[in-house]
Length: 98
Image (cartoon, rainbow, N blue to C red):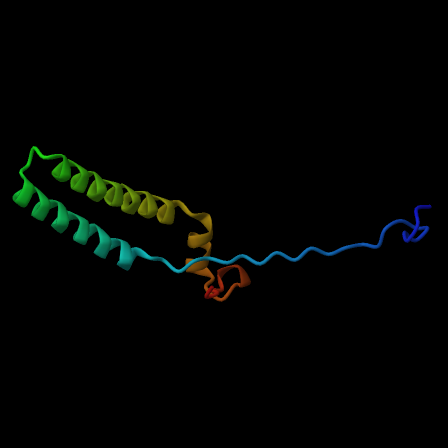
């Protein structure tokens, strides 16, 4: 048998997995979306609606809106989220701050 391995084979190992879920950042995302829309409006009023700066500002706002829509869709379809609504005290549902 290989050196250091008992004759009966390697010792049994036990794996432990901890699930860490991030707290939802929807409040921050909502504020970022509002700020981006305001900035786009201000930029377009100042630089003109046909300016590159106006287009870039609206692209930024649209990116944040798409992120918000994506997060909402994921949260609605996340099996873990659904499970935790019914069993918030389960180990899988514990929130850990990082």
